[in-house]
Image 1 (cartoon, rainbow, N blue to C red):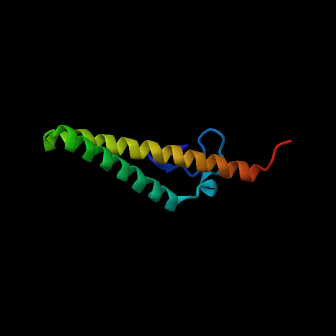
Image 2 (image 1 turned 60 degrees about the horizontal axis):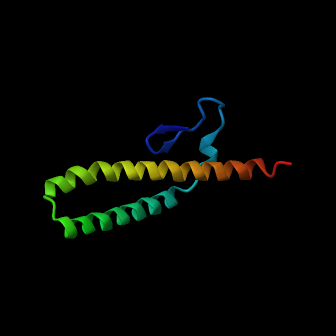
Length: 94
């Protein structure tokens, strides 16, 4: 479903579903990324004030954590949006 860490593929490799037509929410993804970054910065500042670790340790820890959390949250968010858009496209099943 994804062709890059946080980019949706244009077509599903298994069922050939046109995922490019279903993907929406690029701006909301930016808002989500900003929100995640703010939360992570607040946590980092809390750790800085409480424990006072060396700056190199903070950078070595928070750089990969930030990248991982942002990619994971974007994948979750985009999967949820694709699912909702697919459900709208299909309509109610009876």
